Image 1 (cartoon, rainbow, N blue to C red):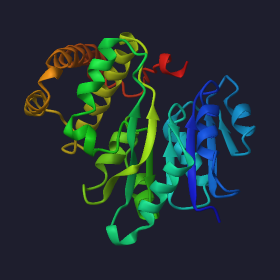
Image 2 (image 1 turned 90 degrees about the horizontal axis):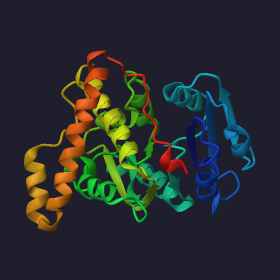
Image 3 (image 1 turned 180 degrees about the vertical axis):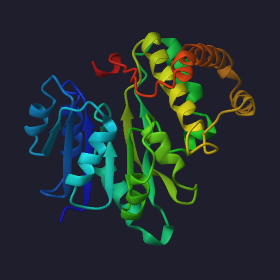
Image 4 (image 1 turned 45 degrees about the vertical axis):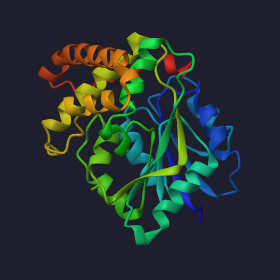
Length: 280
């Protein structure tokens, strides 16, 4: 049996799915991982590109990440299970580290995620400034969301399957586990590709605000990962050079909240504001 199942929901990811699979399988032994790519609602060559890597591909005409995760779970053969977004990069050693963290039963870890490695060198200054603050927020540093990868044990997998359907599946997954049940594995890293433009960053943040609003109004209310003014003041105290960055962070946050109001009032929790710039 493979030592872990890796489930990759992919909607029109032909441009980047090869980038992910190349790194994921680079040093893997034959049959070490049970990799399932779920091409959902694609009108590009996502499935064909994935098949060239010798992984299993499941196709569905339904463009839904939630449905893709469900289908991938049905097809998966092993535990632990590692859920990976198609637009990030994670290597063989990183998946092994996540798997091993979950197999250490004495720790009580049910869910694990890697450290983030943000690609920011060629991003415009406002995008770099935003992430300089965002990546230092306590909720962001401690939570499993925003990493593109969540790995769960068999027990953790059952808990995920019991979650209500929400747009922010990674945030909901993080909140489903108590701090002692989840772990950020320092030896594992996921390469995250942030937006290349301020406009695309705003689209992502509008989606994030909508995600939080949906969780606040649903059965998971009271478990939100909120950031307060005290958190921002603490960051400024530790790194005064970030004060201009804090101004950018607050401005983008306020604009995103204003733009998200219409969707929140309409309870539109299905429109996915996708960032295409990071997929080039």
